[in-house]
Length: 343
Image (cartoon, rainbow, N blue to C red; front, side, top):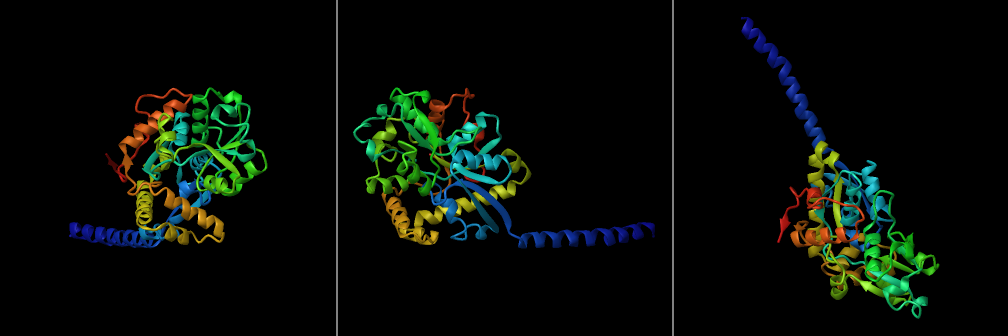
């Protein structure tokens, strides 16, 4: 009798608890996962997949809602991530490596970029004065906005290119040029910067308007080959080690959202991509379409890490970094359980 009584009591207590938990899980399943992503932009070509996530419903398809926070550089976007204002960042991988070298626990989940599209462009008014990179000695160079703890990929690349031509950091003055059309075009038009290590499609748009000329273009194979690690992985999806431990499901969902977006872009035409962005400026729309047609391999098509690209990135970082890092430094940052690898 006593055993029967105890069994009935257990059933009376446990069953409602199970039903309550099941109901809670069901309610949680109905509520979208809220995700915040920090990235340079807006409508910076390298980071365009982030702007497209909500436009094509890639987040809703995975039961989530993604909110994007835009910044003037990858270093600032990464700092926003590490300050816990965002769950993830899509920023330059070399910039994330710079942050990691300063003891920040940033990890990398998936690639975004295919080929890097940086351009070192110079104001057209300086055409007679500046014929080679060496002629930039004493000039003002604009780079993507950095943070105190992380140097942007733009700044790392600018310093490497200058160094190859005998110019050290103290021989030029570097200023923040942002990572949008308004910021990069204004620092050049106003004369605040003599040259900018900038982005597409802004660079080609400025060149077509005879506002700048190119000294180095990473989209040019010869220019890329002349730079150690010139085929590096630029944009990647990053997060904090803490978030990965506390909420691995959120990280898995974000990787799925990114891969879904990249797969959609790989099949879409440049016109379809531009239409989804719903741009009101016809000139801006024209240049997005033009540049997407010109550089069809700008994005990863499947969200998987390329071993050769990672090797190039490790080489690039070691050429540009002033910090001493251990062997296989980049490998220690990679968390590819949801993205995978190839070649």
